[in-house]
Amino acid sequence: MVQWVQRRSTREPVHLDELETTFGIGSMRDNWNNLASENAMHHIASEETNWEERDFFASGERDITRHLDPVLERLHFSLQGKKLLEIGCGVGRLSFNLAKRFPEVDALDISPEMIKRAIEYQERFCVSNVRFHIGSGKDLAGFGNDEFDFCFSYIVFQHIPSVNLIFDYVREIGRVLKPGGMFLFQVNGFRHLRLPGSRYVMLGMRDAGRLRKWGIWRRPFLRIGRLDFVSGAPVKRLAMLRVCESARLDIKEIIGDHSQYLWFAGQKMYP
Ligand SMILES: C[S@@+](CC[C@H](N)C(=O)[O-])C[C@H]1O[C@@H](n2cnc3c(N)ncnc32)[C@H](O)[C@@H]1O
Image (cartoon, rainbow, N blue to C red; front, side, top):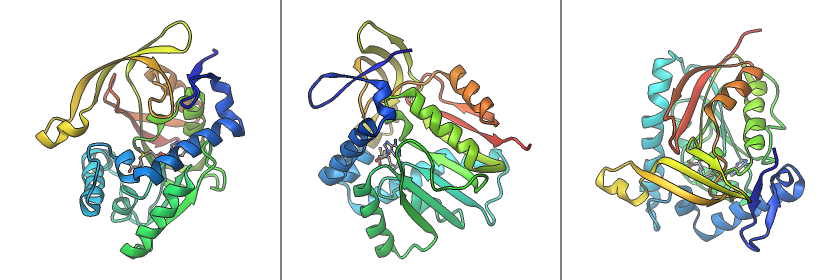
């Protein structure tokens, strides 16, 4: 199916297949490099404009406690000796907190500017069990087959405007996970409708942003617009189930249907 995304700078439509070419990935990388240089912490966690460093990393711990820990517990996942891969790590807001749980963490991001900052924090915080990597933006090249015990990603795929690219990442998760290894990742799961041209209607529940301060985590959301590097492609649950099955990923839990936070958790099948 042909889909279109609006190029932010020129408002000129860009064929989504371009995202699979060097040019498309290059624009995505430029976009995140610019956001990192402008105000990395805000563009990673938008509920604050001027984050205090301590609060920013504490927000990462809160997110891990809220989203990952209960899944680890329900899936009876033992952390001992385990190696985790984080996709889309930004400046390490989650990575350093993941490294408190997992003995070994590899964390990759499309943006060299984000990774540069992540490594600076790593040196300052003296964290030795995380390795940061600049990724291709479209796959997990550089990592071996059956290398990881856990793959994790949060607020990354929701920004990718190509469903095919998101599915490619999921197939890659199937490749790099060990048989029996587990995964938890989040995508944009809004209900949606394609309109003529490049427009979409999306509706569902989304992050409350600044309202979080008052204990409100979600708010209703309706958007009629075009996809870009912030408003990524919504993903249909059924399509994801099919891709996971083809990648030998057995889905054990689906959380947050029809919201900005649609999570898939599960395990790579044994041969
Ligand atoms: C909103 S930030 C979230 C960072 C981190 N997950 C967190 O919660 O702190 C999104 C991150 O995804 C990265 N990203 C966007 N598209 C990507 C892609 N195609 N491949 C890898 N990383 C990507 C961006 O560079 C950015 O650092």
